[in-house]
Image (cartoon, rainbow, N blue to C red; front, side, top):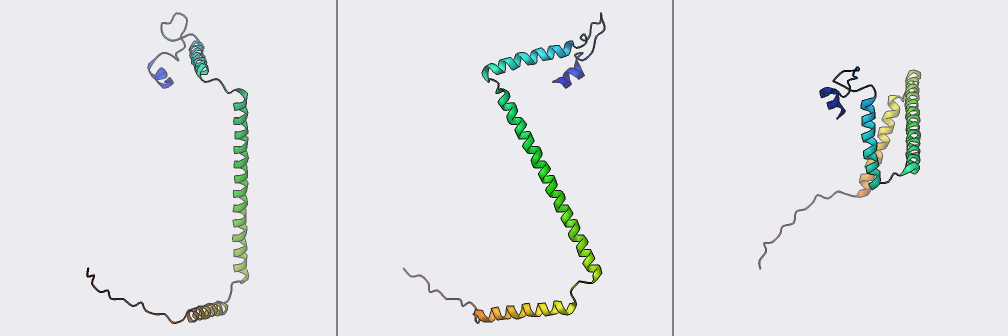
Length: 139
């Protein structure tokens, strides 16, 4: 609405004394304010104002939202710091040569494979599924 008034009318134009176009300074603002108050009053006849209780609820809501945002930001920063520390620790371990040797890795694989074989043996022999033939239905 105000975009239209700005583009297509002289509503915002401040007129000099004697001009035939525009309004005296602050007159347009007063006009808008009067209309706003008139319709606010009409609205409050049907829907009474909730008063200070509503304002207090909004204030509490905004404070909780700010606190939650601050808590999340702190958690995110702590998580980022933990990841950074873990990465630095990993790089330090690589530099120190703490990485397991190939023989240790092979031994672990052998143990895992042996356990898998024991599990298969404990299950018993595997049977191939047998297809049953059905006789035709005779009523």
